[in-house]
Image 1 (spheres, rainbow, N blue to C red):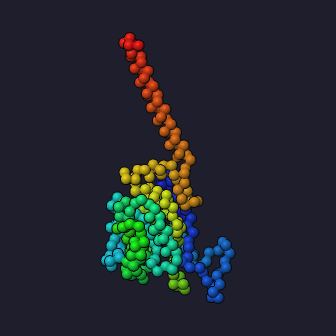
Image 2: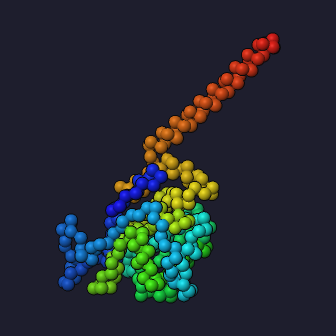
Image 3: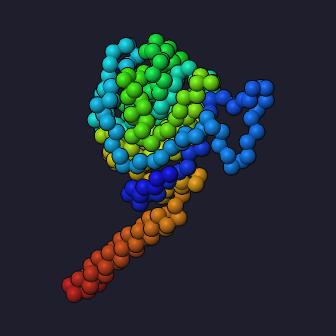
Length: 284
């Protein structure tokens, strides 16, 4: 696991990879392995964080309409990008990730296409744009508002694998199961395509996603409130969540206290000067 420090926020997280279905032995009984031993299907599966790395925006994929599209079409608009790598025929885990993502997107008072972009890409090179179009219809149909900025793409020329390697997202195909073993995580990128945050699991807190998007937006004026809140909240890699950071809260409280005292003293000095002036003029 790689660690990076960006703007004083430590975000080094260990991803617990999840497999799309339980491992099975030939008898049909669940495989029993020591707690410290990984199933062979999960060897090499996980996430290595590359915070601050730029992804290749010239990588090409297939859009829901069947036409090729480059990643850069979704970047450079001044909006952060929420990216997830899944596959559309995944029997369980990918649906849980998308369900959790959809739920938290409902809770955020922003709309994909207005304040941020969402790009969902299949890691399965065998999946067609028909599947991505159907998946998009399902999830946008269950969304509580129009989401013109949520895009569902298919792989082209193994570019999904290249993108995953740049992000540090490691998965593998298990031919015996006919499924992919992959971690449960989503990624937040800046408008320029720089990796800004990794979020893990299948359920996401509204505060975590909202703050991550605000952080990636590079403090655009429309998100000033969130940037102020980020000063008081730091990313806790152990909890994979934003938590109140006592030092910053005390710094902010101290700064406000100094400002209030300064304003009070400034006012008192002005009153005293005015009083002295009136004494000299014999007005009092």
